Length: 450
Ligand code: ARG
Image 1: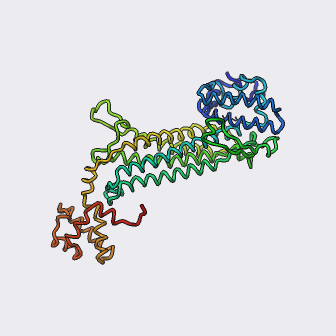
Image 2: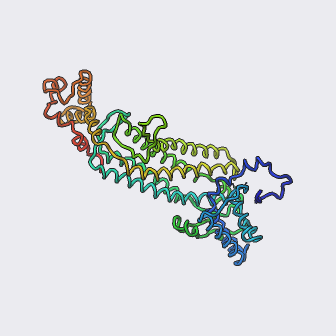
Image 3: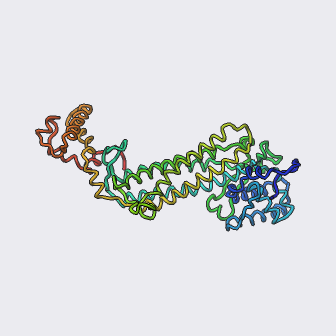
């Protein structure tokens, strides 16, 4: 059993089941690099405040730097018997530099430490994720360019609505991703790194010592650059605030929902019934029983994970809602949902970036679908409006015409003037047939800037 950061007032050993039940090392080991950066900053603060000599600070710093390098090189092995990553780092530092390591926890509490590490982790991951989102936006743009000019049937209520450019359809997902990017970027920027809250009541160190400019060593620096640390404005809030976790989980739930909707469209479009797209073999799987099957499982898992991301949000939000101030151990349970949603988002966007590049559109099937006359009913209404009919009247006339066509299985395109006249004097075959044209239809709509 690893050393604990507490224990003096206890006579008995912790029940082994409770030990297992309360530990978090099996997931919070992911915070190692960030906790180490926080500890290096803390050493600097202790030196400024006179708790450490320059020599002691240097030895502590070197020990922490050694452990940080181990994390970066993948050589850091968390000890499963440690209560959490903060304990594990303390123990490893003790092994490395001896008794001086025991000074590291001066004027510090894990309650404050865990918030710092989680915030720095979140900022770093969000910066990575926003870069990936930009790439996906670009991939969608390239897909649109590659299929320049292609027109697809647009749907509302899953029923044929009006023809639209494929580029506009794809750009609608880019719009969603732009909002996701902005939301996540704003959250990352809004996360303020603070120290000095202690367990909840502050520490004896003057606030000025907590104003530090720092950077995460080497690799992390590349991503986060320099960041500022401030003394907490309110120590109770600092240790018990998980708004940033909830903000991230909320923004990720929205991102997950967008990716799920895109996946759903692609899944439906890749069915025999639609046949609009072909999803590359590399992103599909087969059936153990039915040899003909090629299923878009990747997209189904993206769709499925949207539920998980939403669940992660609800889990933390619900966990927080009844907590009295300040820190409570319940808060330890914020990490798995946070890590999980961020990891899902990163892998999904990474995969979609590659999947999107391979999507092939089936021109012949799209053209066949665009043959459906119902897609041009609205154009017929506008045609009558242009000829002076009130919109409502025109709508009713074309509604009747469509019904007549469906009931009698006669295409409007094939109707003669005499037949069209039964519905309106303004309907003349030579004009009407020109309207059943996808390009004419999309070009007639001018309200949206492209
Ligand atoms: N592993 C804990 C967490 O993630 C660290 C804080 C424990 N603090 C305490 N006072 N027991 O929240």
